[in-house]
Image (cartoon, rainbow, N blue to C red):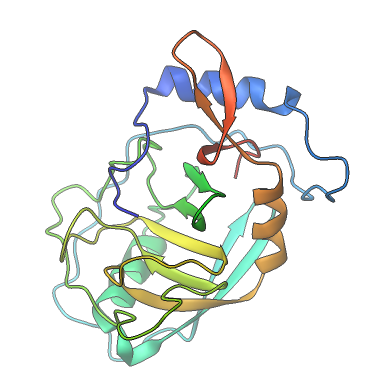
Length: 218
């Protein structure tokens, strides 16, 4: 779940994928997500000052409003104060507004990754120093069970804005801060995942892949 894993592509390629993806056939046995059309496109992130101290009153829930419905996350509170403070600051400043979830994995691990306005898989808040890892799920067989919400990173203490929603039990190295649990909207995530992901094949075509860009724009 490193931010840099996966294909980092240009805005032009992303736009092409998103414009062609509705034509891809979905599994007729799976009920598709009820999503509205979105005009979101990759863009430069807003500049937000990095918090220098944790909030005294941490939010109990954080709601992600998407074109496919609301995903409500119950936070772990004081188990990850720096993480939750940082995400709250970004959300209140509109950092995540009209941003695209840029990665879906459906083989081996089951996650939807979001939080990078550039949709390049490498975006992070401008000028921020990575913040500390918290609440790592050590000593567990299934480190990231379905419903977990965690931080994506590119190494120890490099957290920024990218997060991932786990829609199926996944076993990863316990290197990613767990900061919440989906209490409403897990069905939305599984429905989005049912449509699959695509990757460019190098010949101007896009093929289904176990790790790529979601067919359903979120």
